[in-house]
Image (cartoon, rainbow, N blue to C red; front, side, top):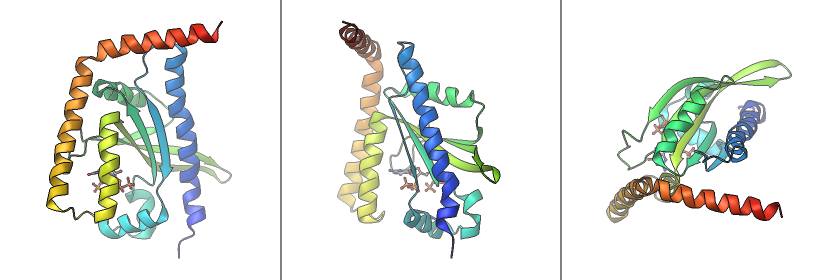
Length: 210
Ligand code: 0O2
């Protein structure tokens, strides 16, 4: 019987610390009044039931979770535009508070499900009262459209336990294509959108200063 509180404690600490750090990157863009490639950041520790399900599906023994399950600590960084994803990955590569272990590009190579996202697996040092402990964490970087699709597909997956009826499967594929086209369209009018956003940010600042 695993002591889950003890096992998950460094993961919880890592998620809290990384949320602050990654959100801090967005804040720095705001302070510099320049377009932030990061729209928002979320994070979670995988629930115990999901850890057990995944370990079972992938045949991972519970005493190997630390090295073989890379997404017990999970962070998500959402971007407005596909091009922002590259910039965010570059920002992550340039940091020296963690080490990148692996990158998985499901944007150039989308999954058969239609899933698109860029995954960066990091080794993150957590400071504990017993010294430093390095844990694995997965950062998923995706556009708002990719996130919308993945969130819906994830909840349907939960409902149908991966066995989608044919019509739902087809609609999800079509929705994935629509999300892809939406990203393309937004990229084409990126300049216009950013001008409008800069205008509103400036106006808000002026109102706050009067
Ligand atoms: P949860 O509930 O998000 O934690 P594998 O599961 O074998 O495909 P692997 O090797 O664990 O993947 O790593 P990978 O490919 O980086 O995928 C891990 C996570 O990516 C998943 O975690 C999801 O969050 C997300 N993901 C991958 N494929 C899909 C997909 O087809 N649809 C959606 N909605 N998300 C996906 P978990 O553990 O599955 O789930």
